[in-house]
Length: 293
Ligand code: PAF
Image 1 (cartoon, helix red, strand yellow):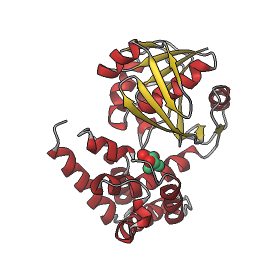
Image 2 (cartoon, helix red, strand yellow; image 1 turned 45 degrees about the horizontal axis):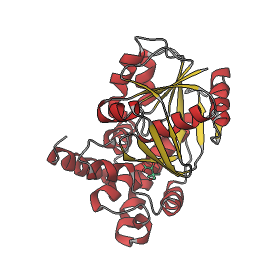
Image 3 (cartoon, protein in one colour; image 1 turned 45 degrees about the vertical axis):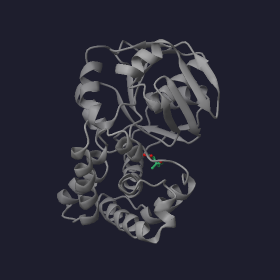
């Protein structure tokens, strides 16, 4: 079975490495310095230590399953490239809301996915496996399909904890609300996730973001205890530097529009004001426009 990783950055490289180690044929699609580095091999450190020769390329190919791990703002470009080949089952493992809907415009079989596996790029071609998590995959319409079951099985064969679920849309929103309350605060204040709960000033903001997210989700029909889940994730990942903090530190674009931006847009659609999410959205956009990307 041929597995393709569309966007072999930190998470994509980790998933690809675990797949290849368990015997799957893996195509790593990457760009720029990461692509050049991968051509010389992929190093994994952290929870496992290994070095692999990998097949890395700029453009996607035909595959049985394609995991999409590009940044949310690159989803459209990735989807257009995937439309030029037969990518098989396309399963997003990205952050934020709206990726699957973009992929569906260009690809036939699209599954939603949410993962809490933690990976960081120590350098181009070197991924740190920072934490084991859980991955959920599922159809956006809530059907339990053979494709979703098969993708979860493939992930498990690669040694990952994974399950096919019938509520992936809820899980995507829940993760986005958690990210909305942790990521921009850590990025603006340049702190690790744990500080969001340890510092009572930061916690006030995080709680307000979570409560707005909860209200929006409630109106969508999802009862999500956002405040306690944000607390739990910030405590569990206390030593992590969030993905948005890493983006801001490297002067890269962030996924704010697909996280807090998505909450603000959905709120507007449902007649719910989300002023704290909106403020963080504008502050992060301000940081982005002040950097060189
Ligand atoms: O985006 C991230 O960094 C992660 O989703 C999370 C949960 C905030 C942990 O760092």
